[in-house]
Length: 191
Image (cartoon, rainbow, N blue to C red; front, side, top):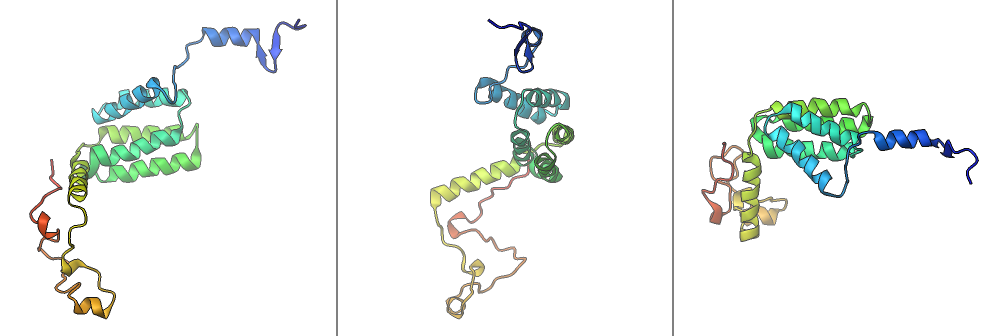
């Protein structure tokens, strides 16, 4: 039998347990549905340009013990995938937030995350860079190693130069530099 019923173990007391059980706590399973639902809500709130909703989901993740680097990584991805060339500085800012989280840690890094969330939420959005990458990736998988035009091949040896590698290369050419099979292909399309 426990001699002191108020003190169960270390600093855990009956009163502490009562308060814990009666308090509102955030349900968050780092490998389950609530984790994925919350990060999805966070991203979709930024995508919809709703900083208040994004801040709420950020705070919810922080209070639930989410790894701040996970949140910051998702912000870096978001900056390129959802904002892209509409605001190229978004990637710089998101990367700065990630670096701040790495070097500062909680609780202060929450301020850096908040700063980034507001910026990314309010930035103009465009998925054009993301779609361009996906289209180029599709052709790379579909066609494999297409022949690289001779003018843009590397020519570190005399033999390669004699074979025509790098011949006719111009830095600022208007000539299409895609492989012959892809001539005229446009991946980047401004939305």
